[in-house]
Image 1 (tube, rainbow, N blue to C red):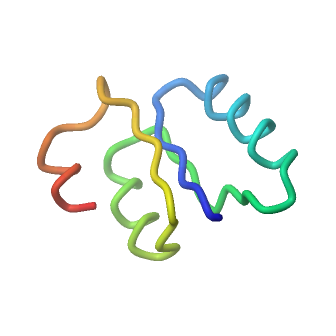
Image 2 (tube, rainbow, N blue to C red; image 1 turned 30 degrees about the vertical axis):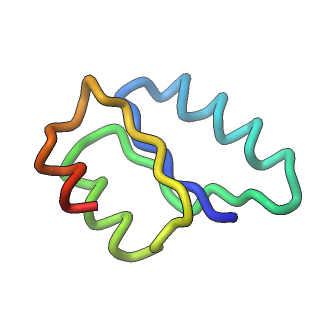
Image 3 (cartoon, rainbow, N blue to C red; image 1 turned 180 degrees about the vertical axis):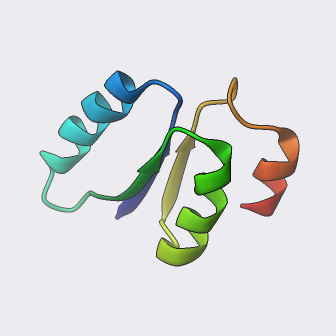
Length: 65
């Protein structure tokens, strides 16, 4: 499974990445702390799962993903 992490807090992204990467079948394919990078990251990597900080992103971004 591939995962993309989008949260404004780098410490949270790093912690989640550490947990996910400890599993052989879960791979973090991209991460971002800004809305601008999120959409391009998802379009390039097509992750199976996207974890988004709802406080950072607008509803329009959710529809785009």
